[in-house]
Amino acid sequence: MSKYLFYTLLYFALFALLTVAVVLGFTSPIDEGVTLDTSGYGLQLLRAISYIGGTYIIIPLSLIAILFLLFKKRFTSTLVFSMNLSVSFIIYQVIKEIVARPRPEIISHTSPTIPFLSIYAYPSGHTVGTAVFFISVGTIIFDKKPTMKNILPLLSIPVIVGISMIALGNHYFTDIIAALLLSISVVFFNLNLEQKYDLDGLIEYFFSLLGISMEASE
Image (cartoon, rainbow, N blue to C red; front, side, top):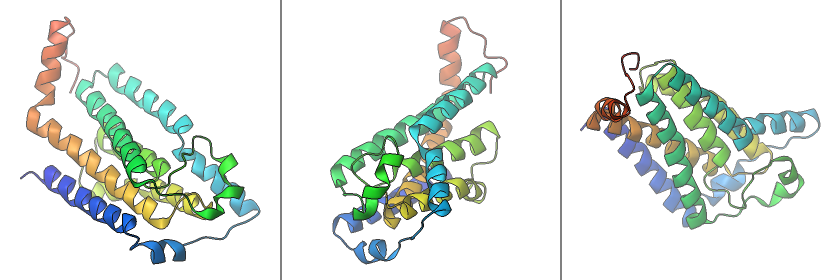
């Protein structure tokens, strides 16, 4: 078993266990106990931070990253980067609908400030989008070795975004933890696919059919 597959199974198993615990109500004491009371300038700052994880920020930044990779003829990286974003989006949307966890009751005074906020809380889409984006940027664009030692620092911004969502009353604590676990598992899953199925060779063959040279790619 490759280390990428091991990390995929480990973090997805933790995500699955947490999801079961949430559905059964085992996490309620934790979620109800972890709250952040803010007001005034602190509230405005948290709202600004929460925007980082919104689709209106993540999607443009992702498109810029993909265009950069294509310009550099890093086609395999482009594919993996795109897979990270698309797979995580599909999974978290499906889980949201299945779990159908209502958002905290205190959301009423903050929800108008957070565009694209769905009616369900679990897992946090803002945190998933931010985590997958920054992990992908760090490990793919800046060529950092995709190990847990290198990935954990990349989660600092997603964690801050997650904290802001808790403070604004948009999410519970476990919504954020689940989003981080899911994001890490998806990234390692796609890295495992790249390693196992030789995506470089597949992409090179595809572009050769189109008459496009891969000499400057990865």
